[in-house]
Image (tube, rainbow, N blue to C red; front, side, top):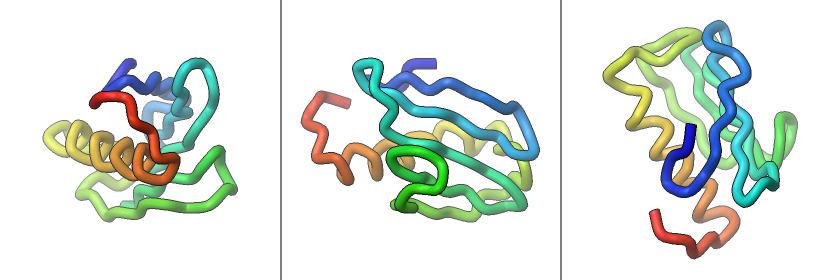
Length: 87
């Protein structure tokens, strides 16, 4: 999936719902939702956590919240790296 100029590769659908995130072919982040905790690590799993949230979904986003949390996560990635591409 491509969102706001980033490529999100959904590597697991549920328990956890997780994504590897790329910009111009380079991995820039890892997103993971498990046990009601959503986090963003850069540049990959185990790296610095730059965003946390507690969505309704436990191991998968509720349909009405996925777009919101993915957009917030990508905004955190953009800010962390100082990416200047248009959203």
